[in-house]
Image (cartoon, rainbow, N blue to C red; front, side, top):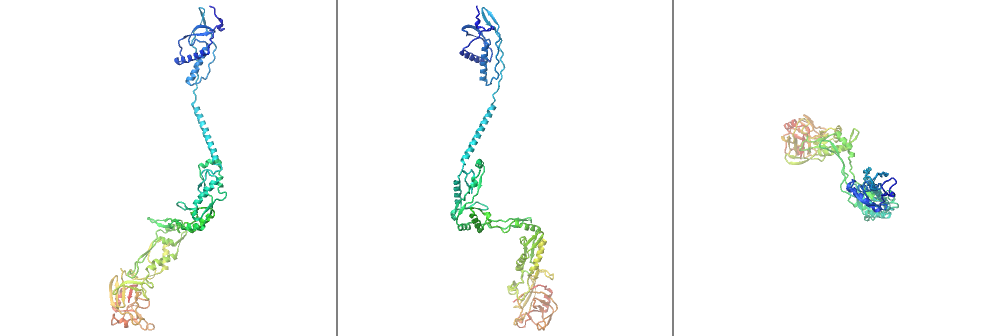
Length: 605
């Protein structure tokens, strides 16, 4: 058989096959199907008829016995399939291989292509698609969107607040944010007109007087809103988070008289101020109890201040600034030196004791000078203490002399007379019995006790002393010791510690001669003499010696013995003494021996 050399390559290779487009598609589909079924394993050869240069020639080919062009197409099909199914990219192209020489055997005039070993598959390189890159792109997109929104919001804010007041802008407590100048002015004026006048107390809620109640109309001065209007609009967003308050003074037209009347009539408070004071604690220490100013108002001060503020265009009145609140006279701060003095003096207590007296005639008791009173008298200069003696004297006079002194003109003694029962006996024109305080000497000693910081119980200093339970003679009494002389009954009783010691008839002054009559009143034994000459011829027109003389007045009237034939009865009317009380000798002696100085002698009419 003659070989057709036209279909052979010059090197003697198998003739090239020319495939149509449809055949090429079919071959790619078959190759893809075979890949999926066998995972690139060789499959059994299938017979096929193909057109080679217009001639049909039978050929037996396995998948790996095809021409170089067929193998190239198959490899490309696998790459396409792998890229589609695995999601990986084939990153290196296959190198173009030169056609390999084929050994041909001639048999029976036909050329047979020798079976070749399978071609090794070139290594594939894959690269995963990075998901992180997608997330980063999303973040960038979101960030750009947010910035765009913020920018649009900022621009919108500029547009909204153009020629308007920024948000959270307050004038006189009125929110004018977002308003034009005219709207803001109207809002402030309307509020001011409604509010009229507002008082801000030191505690509690504001107090408002409506403008209509005192004929008030308001206007704003020129350029009143300039400052809030000048806020930077470029930074308008900052005002969303911060509040700005402005106060402008409004111009008022009102009746001052009506306003003053309103202030005077209003009930501003009813708690009066209370002074601070030093108090003593349970443990004996001292502390300051602070003052309480209460809430009462001096309406005159408040009216004057309010009118002045209104004239300046201010209709919000800070009441504390007007000094209208009434204040305590004594503050805790002012008591600091006093507290120091209290602590220095300590527990100084001065008690005056007036109990050692004849209680049936004399008022008895004790008077304690407390710390608060002492501290009111004291001023300090460093460690020096000065006592106000005028205040001290006033205290001694009021609390001792006026309460306990009995040797005072007009004083009346009350006691139970033996014959007549309860009586009132004036001290009498010549009376010498009773107690009389020496105020100046008492104050002098008192100042010394205060400066020394002594706690003492003492008696006042007396000018005149009455009867003591412990007499000057050293005799102790328990009370109710006195001599009673009854002119009407011409009788004498001597009581010692409530018991009758003796009694006797007497003869008193001549009743028919007023110059010789014995005067009723409160007296005392102020001396004891034995013997004693009484009277002189030059003055009294007589001279008499007596054995026992006990004077009871400073004018020469006293108790003494006198030898008479009788005592008592009506003798005294026409044959009485020169004013003395005449006693039998034995009675006079007993009284003289028993009696002590200052023993009361009550002569009743």
